[in-house]
Structure formats: C-alpha cells, structure tokens
Amino acid sequence: MKFISKFSSRTVVMPTTDIDTDQIIPARFLTTTSKEGLGRYVFHDLRFNADGSEKQNFVLNTPAAQGCGILVGGHNFGCGSSREHAPWALLDYGIRAVVSTAIADIFKTNSLKNGLIPVVVDQVTHETLLQNPGMELTIDLEARSLTLANGRSVEFPVGGFARYCLLAGIDQLGYLQQHLNSIARFEESRSWTP
Image 1: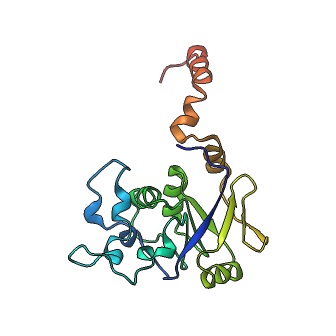
Image 2: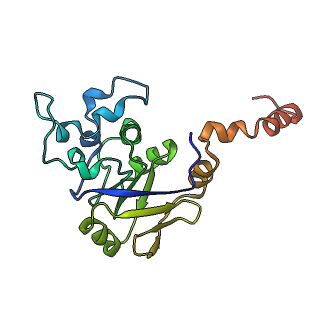
C-alpha cells in the first residue's frame, strides 16, 4: 500500500444520495482479483450508453472532472453489498478520497484497507462542497482534517489503527510482519502448544 499523509486535489461532485456499490462497479465486472484496470468500469452504467459511448451529461465525462482526485458524493455513499472492488475501481480511476455526510461502514472499512480516504463531514461543509464543484481541497490524514479553498478546516473521524497503517504505507498483513520477531520470541518461549 502507498504511504498517505497529505494531499490536495480538486473535487468532482455527484450529489446523488444512496450511491451504492453496484453503481460504483456493477457486479458483472467482479470477475477479477486484480486491482488494475478496474477504473474503466467505475460508475459504468451511469457513464456509458448501451453501445459503449460516453453519456455526455454524466459528471465524470465532463472536461471539468478530469484530474479530480476527490469525489464529493451525496448522503449515504457506498451503501449496498460489500465489495472491495468498489474502492479498487475508484482508486484505479484516480479518486483518492470520498467526501460525504455519511459513508456506509463496510465501504468505509474496505476503503481504509486499500488506501481510499473516506471523509465524513458536517451538513454545512457538505452543502458548500456540493455547491462549489471543482474546489481545491487539502486532506491531511495526520491531522484528520479537510481544508477548503477559503482556508476553513474541518476535522473528520478515522480509526487509529487504519490511520496508522495508511500513514505507514502498510496494510494489516504489513502491520503483522513488522512484529515477526516478537511473534517468533513468543512462540519460542511459550510453555504450551496449540
């Protein structure tokens, strides 16, 4: 996993409430265990017509959305079934953080395990972001803060263990591997066998 501490990007806004994981990446694209290439399927049924052509009115297909790394979604983002492919697809597309007033717990957990930052903000901040697409934001994981273009900063919650792993650039397995010597010493010194 990549080390994450602080980054800035413009926002792309999708104000729809209850954006679910099947909208983020439809189930028919879940036939791979590789993270690479999934970005081409992100919001597939919303982005493309039946013939494969882009829907011109979909926000990710507009010139203003190109290069935006922060997605501001409507309330209850990432609801629906658990699929790790959803944060994989967003990351592969270039989205590094999702901001909303509520982010589904399973989606939030899958995101944190894979390096996508779920940022839950208050209603006033959310309304400001929805009304100002393309705003430059700074997300500081160490400070647990999101800073708006006007300099106003708001804190967002993130679990201590997930934050530690993201700041260290490791996943759960990487965390355990950091303690291999301690684990080996314990196994050598214990008086009982499992």
